[in-house]
Length: 377
Image (cartoon, rainbow, N blue to C red; front, side, top):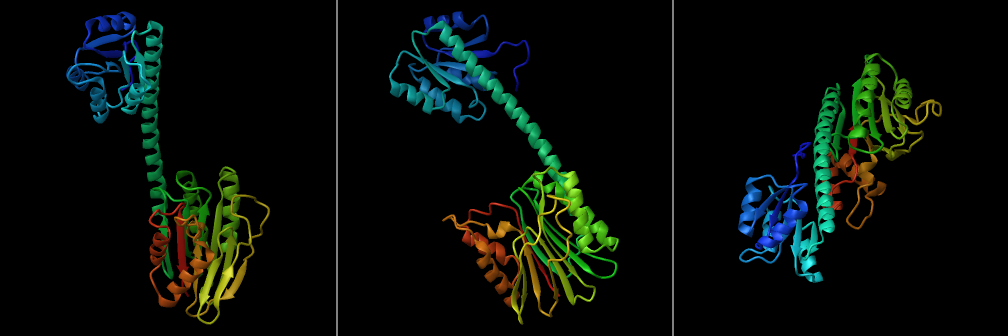
């Protein structure tokens, strides 16, 4: 709770010697509300029951000494944030180190110098007030972030994803994700599939998702080609998002009879086309990510091919290939291609990717958002 305007901060002076208490009361009494405890046990009772902004604590006291009082204060969630300044006649370095190790904020030696006492007290109270204000600000920001995450999540979950002929998996470092997966059918029966990977991760990266999703589903429903949709996405992202926010994208357009496929790769890792007859066909990036420039790409397909029976196409973000082992080695393209080939050949669930990465990373988790999509004929 923030100190209210016009209210003096409260300082608890803990000392078993009345003369020492009188000295500190004389130094600080005009500026602060002073409370007194002549034992460690009484100090703990007072701090548990009454508001205290700072404690001046004698070390050498009969019964419970100052070190034990400080230890118990810092062990209690209700009192651990109260700054403690030790005041003692012992000036050895070891004593000071022990006090600071217990969580004390500062250390003064007797006989005290009034100007130093005032300065140290003012500093610790100012630091505590700053911490309180920072905590309050962080709580507000946390609430606002949670609200924005909820809004983005609701907008994305409302997307009319069409899961026919598509399997996908997705992992996010935070509640919101910078990777997106979209699938829709045009009125003529052609299918559009898009995987997007926004720069960065978390909430900033996730903001572009609903915008891209709206363009994709709206224009697909109107019968637009994937080429036109990519052009429009690029134009809108360039104009609506800040320069540092852009989207690597991989996109497919399958003909209504599913015999031909056109593919675009704008900054994603290589798209994999797997078939029993021809093995692996790799489609490397042939254009800039969307949202960087309005004029550098006509968005002609980067690959056009026959969609063979039994062929599967895999699109994925670099969160998978850039997964890192405990030895700091990337998972890499070769391992992913081998795993995708096994999934295709043995008709395994895509979740095998997460099992493989968990083992490879040694349980330390991914360092980026990740997504993988499989499209079948």
